[in-house]
Image 1: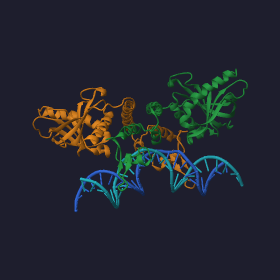
Image 2: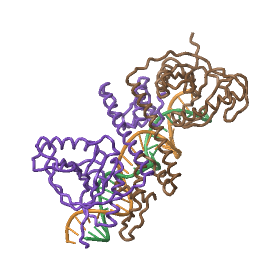
Image 3: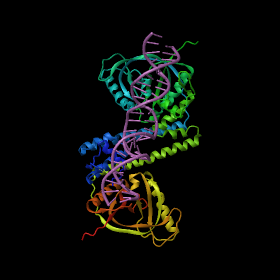
Image 4: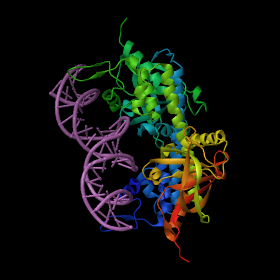
Length: 259
Length: 259
DNA sequence: TTGCTCCTCACGTCACGTGAGGTGGC
DNA sequence: TTGCTCCTCACGTCACGTGAGGTGGC
């Protein structure tokens, strides 16, 4: 009648999501009322859209507006997931069809004064976090009357990929010094020798340049500790076409004297 | 370097999906070669697209064409899932915004000679199964030189919804008799008294009419055993717009003499 | 010598699906 | 009396994530 499977309403009873109107004390039979059918239909649709049971339970008694808001929020999450899927599909096609021509590796030293926002960020939140952080940094630079003296970037510790979260730093190199403005604080980039490779294309393909650069470093250089800086030469703030993005991936190395 | 998490390659080793080139016998340390990076990148993309690990393993040593075929098949599954998601979203919106105006219930008797394809079908396969079955039935009717004497339909036992699979029968009422033609076989609909409600709109919303009709039957009539016939008055073969679909849902009842 | 990384179990996750084994109503 | 439905555990699923507890290399 509701098109639910047999075990489903039992489980919903166990977790308190859809309570029978009565349970026979001797046989344990669950009885439901016709008025519960609509509720069951809602639950079934939300579950087909993979909404977690606790969230579904949250829509129970709330009025129309609160429930609609929860549903809308879930639909928006699904939209984002969909965008992500499209990106990964494109990235998969690229991987299968276009062999990576490794870009040349350049050795450079990095250090300098920046204005930075540093926070512990989950890996999956990184894109949206950056989307908010960089405009904030630009605004802070303008407020302080400073000049941007180089390429904006991010400092990504290993933990972000290896453990799913870590302290990411989004930075803008500046002239002069400033105090903290909102979340933006003065920050001096740790001095480091870097092997640098330019990545052309969407961020979703960044791992290919990481792979090429990391292989190169492990073959021909000596890797050093420390987070990996990325410099966003062409990024969403400059272009709306991911194919035109340019990112410098910077691998810390020990420069040994071998001459 | 590959942007995989720490436990992931360990698990891939356990299940034989990505073997290290060597394992230190004393410490158990896994060693990987730079040449494995590309493989890891492929695995990561396929996993982000939720391809099951056994399927990912299947892409291992196969050549480009076989691998591309597996990937293409997976992408097609994802496309279908996406279409389904869009349907359910629309259905959810309908459920929240448009209260169901219950259609009138009509009592009718059904019985007759048909040509039918009967097979055990999983619930999720029903739409694609019907898409193949009905053209086959029409072709069989034409081959046998028969006339279609009524509305085509399907006989859906409770099991399909309650247990995920059951013996579904797609049928076409015919004049006269015929032998088996391919999967199509002569079939006499079991005689039954039916409470019938017309459903207007996409199949995804069918449960609402089931709910309304089932509630009506349980309130005012006596339900009988047996599979539930559906008559496809306007269906995909007649119209490309799901909003124009018309389906008669037929609930078996006992007609008691109460006059 | 001290961290640090790597290791190996072992258990948790999430929403049911799937038997095993038993019981009330027609 | 015989099926049939409903019931209650209890375990399986799937791809890792998450500690607990231990060990080798700098």
